[in-house]
Image 1 (cartoon, rainbow, N blue to C red):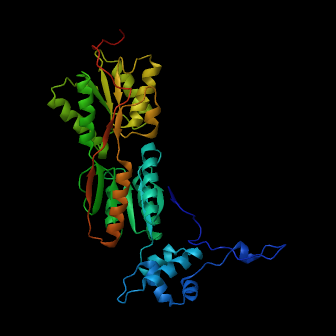
Image 2 (cartoon, rainbow, N blue to C red):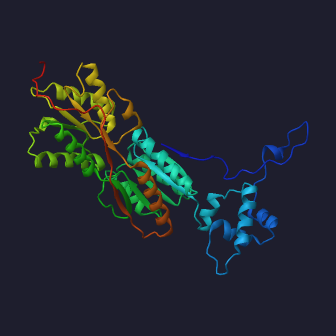
Image 3 (tube, rainbow, N blue to C red):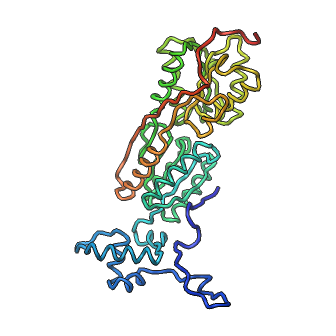
Amino acid sequence: MRAVESTDPASPDSGSPPPQAVGRVSSAAAHPRVPTMQDIADASGVSQSTVSRVLTGAPNAIPINPATRDRILEIAKQMRYRPNPLARGLRGARTMLLGVIVREITDPFFAGAVDAISTEANRRGYNVVLGDAHGRTEEAIALRTVLETRHCDAILLLGDTSDQPRLMEDLRDTNFPVVGMWQGTAPTPGSSIIGVDNKFGVDGLMDHLLRLGHRKIAFIGGVFVEGRLIGDIGERRVAFLERAAAEGLDTPAVFVRDARNTLGGGAGALRALMDLPERPTAIMASTDVLAIGALHTARKMGLDVPGEISIVGFDDLPMAEYTTPALTTVRMPMAQMAAAGVEAAVDKSQDRQAITLRILKPTIVIRESSGPARPTAPSGT
């Protein structure tokens, strides 16, 4: 378990160091005094309470003169004043911290998601405290406790945690507003949900492959947890099977391969599919990680992609454009989802009853890994 704040970790403050005497380093220079609201009040010629109302955004029955407000903000900027999140949390004010618990930080998709969320949070004046749960309930609960002590204004959960009922129950027992992202699109009691339209993405890939003449399409992705597929992966698999049935495609059970979301998982699934007496002409992977593992193994096996087998993915990781051949995939609306997630967290931290459900549509990105179908050839021919 780890919890890392995205900004300078030590004290919540940094002031300009005072002048030093020539020839020696003073203790004051090594540890500059932290500017306070009273310092800003003295420099601005107003009361500390006025400074507090300006800097915290607290409601005020008596309007503050705009010129006074601007002067306070400018002096605070010059003094490099930074509020203490812990003190603000104890006072009941917003701490401007958002906690993020990631199911699997090693997944390259979530690395990009965290970066997008941090960028959007910083744009709104918030900082991010990050925790990696490694997909384990006990670590996620421990992280929740760490984030609670940091007085975060809200928590964002990245990746499906519905298989961790203890965590969800624990979160409902706190005052934390919770926003779930990339957890599928099913409503979750007590949480706002920001998701991607997985069916729209799968249908777009199927449209593309069908136009290329593919009728034998396989699917890679998803490991069952307690008898079911969770989150986005489960929705993509269901959407694939429904569309295949609607199109009357010949999709035997062996065409649908379970695989862990790793490069090795994609590689193993590709080998199993290529060993079948009758091979598919196209493979849809539920993530780019699986698709890239399959691409790499196809190349090692001497298979022509897309001549013998087309491979498509989902997510549009930065590396997808640079595979050989470049990967056809579904581009996640990452920036828009990050903005929606942070907005939901900020709004919910001010109104604990607010619940948001936003489903955003992805985009199909056609590259060189998909091409016209060729007649199916038996294995080994």
